[in-house]
Amino acid sequence: MVLKNSKTLDNNKDELLTKLNISQKWKSFLCNYIEYANEYKRHASDKRHNINPIEVEAFLYFTGLLVRLIINCK
Image 1: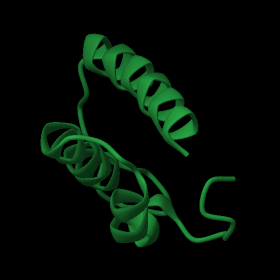
Image 2: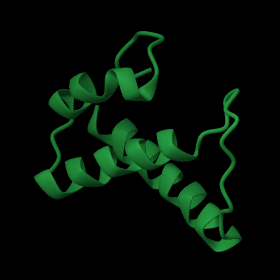
Image 3: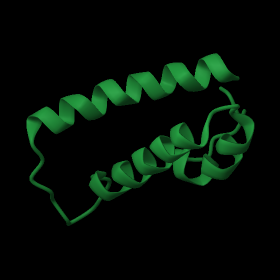
């Protein structure tokens, strides 16, 4: 674990952005990723989205890229 706590990504956003030594553009990518993930999450939500399978695949690949970025920046 990078931040050594059990908070959600959304609740860790500010601390994570401070800890990572990345450009403002990548910080924007990470913020937009978190916002997108929160908008489309399904946890006990009555709201369902129609999502294009291509976007789902891209989101999964982008998740992997962000995980690698975070691990390599720590």
